[in-house]
Length: 505
Image (cartoon, rainbow, N blue to C red; front, side, top):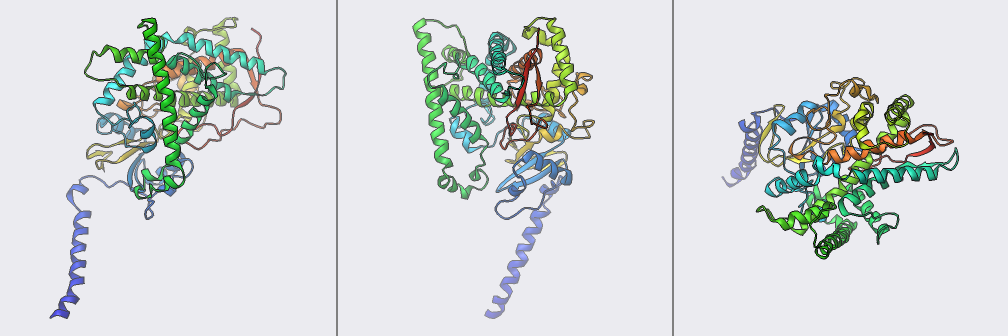
């Protein structure tokens, strides 16, 4: 009898296990919607190996095989990838509230005081209050317009530097470096009240290196976020120590900025806000709401202005200039428009931009082909829901491949072609989150609040470049390249080197 039971036990266990698996697989709750297509995965790493160096491109290729919505397992993290306008609309409009949360990402979480900023804060009252401050006070149209003199002054300085570097018909100018400078200097003056470049402030070199390191580390793959039991590797490879050091350094810098502004306001006995730090201190002192704007939240918002503002704005401008130079007919048409509006003058103002519809079309087309953050910032579902008929469980990460959607032949004619005329003739399609086939800045509650500021910087810089210079390839160069650098923000791999010839006014 005993031997019989010993023989029966394995079969009984296997039978029960089979029933449990069968019930789990065919559970009515799990079959109420379609199962999301998913590529085969490997043990432990899941589908991480399929992302490659350029995830937006790898995911586009996978979507062509598995469909516009697919499930990947990034280590132990389930992630839904959306690669169609229809799916983006459901995520960012139909179910926007369900997908308004952010997954916790360890590197930015350490740098921005436990995700107290706008970009990475979990959805809730804190995020709503901070975003409200940014939208109503820091990045409103009126506020952006109040800083136009800074944009105009910094852009004029960029033009002067290009003229100084163009000492001969063959002089080569590193335009990428100058575009970085004009973006950083503009945002520094707007946010902090002064520049931190060209030796204009103490520690300028340290600031630039610190900002560069932050951008680099933001695009670093952190294995602990996807395979938690391998977090110890970050101690061995030095990532944890590097992040901690950088967080302390940037905190020290931001703290000194806040205290400097606070002290100056007390000494001058003035409440006039001259930059964004002043505005934040003004909001903090008013205490008109139950929300407390503490120093950590304030510093987190300032951080976002740099991390989100400088890097993405500069990247968009660099890609736009590159595409214009690659297409001589586009450059000629754009130059003619800008110079016609200038009317023979050597200067233009931001008011003139409204008379340049082709320039705006060029910017739109560049953003279509080269969104700065091609996968946008990941979202996370807060409850079970359905997207395009597929089940999305609570706690699932969702990545919207804005880059792939903007190159979808179902939405765009000749999608790989740089053709500004598609927007010149169709002004209804815009990048403000209402046209889901075109979402370089995202959409919905988590859309970028800095669109107005970014476009003001980019459009005016582009117009000034086209007004003042003709551009050509350096001697020996065969073509303008479009190679991408690795990172969460997609830069050009190689700097944009040009021969700039000043135009006679």
